[in-house]
Image 1 (cartoon, rainbow, N blue to C red):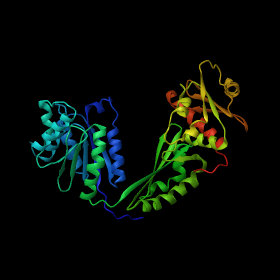
Image 2: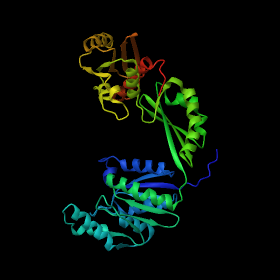
Image 3: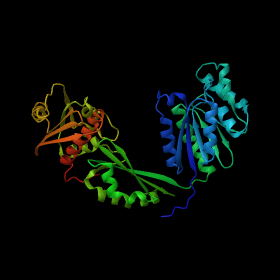
Length: 402
């Protein structure tokens, strides 16, 4: 289906040697990407550069050749290793200039916190010549933008709180007006369990060739997500594009689909247990308590009354053979006085890991063995998804999904 609204493309350039060294996680790029997506802006590239002016400048020049919007984050502090201002100026062939109004803003921020800026803070009042200052009311680092006619460069602080505020209140409104944005990008994610990525691809491969909406896969250990992305002028139009594709995917993938978007496998299981009035306890061996932690961890998407169906668990350290798991699960169900008890054990081997699942409920006893051939450290996650999937099939049977 043709979609004729112009959508500019963007690139995010995250600046900071600490990111390249693995000292911090680059959450800024993720958050900016989501805001651009919601505004209907295509993001085709993300770049991370250390605190080196020449390399930052090179990255900006490369980005200018392939997109219309460049957003940098980081490197706007007062220290020597905050070189973004100079790098942007170098990329567009100008000098930096001192803006007295920015220096007043910096000093005002410090006065608010009853502090006195040092001389190096004065560097923050320099921006590339011709750039437009962006006042930062939630921090001391002023931001700025440069409109080069075909390309807009926007430089934001690296502090997440400051970056998020400026994106919401300054950048997105500016981009909407500057590029006359009239569209949006909407995302729908279907979560599957119990089926591999290649199997899904064989079932839905023709849908993955669509241009709008697009369909893609993201594999995790024991779980595969199916992503549907639609571009449209309105939310209603996007929903109209997404709906038939989601229906087709659900029809082809059937019971392998357990939820969508923010839903989690444990949340779905707890909801079904709540609907049946069943309480749950678990027994684990060789998992590090992974299942207990996942079920007991507060989750904003899981109502409190659903969360209370989980009554706790026991982490075994002395299990010597997989065959013991069923007896331990049976005993723990009695001692914990619950309706359902789920047991999992993980026994690494030379070439593969043996995973045992035991499930005892008002409908009887169930036992299953599966083998995992991947890295042993990923086996607990694989075991968690397999065991919760068995519980889902039991508790959610004949229940209508939300």
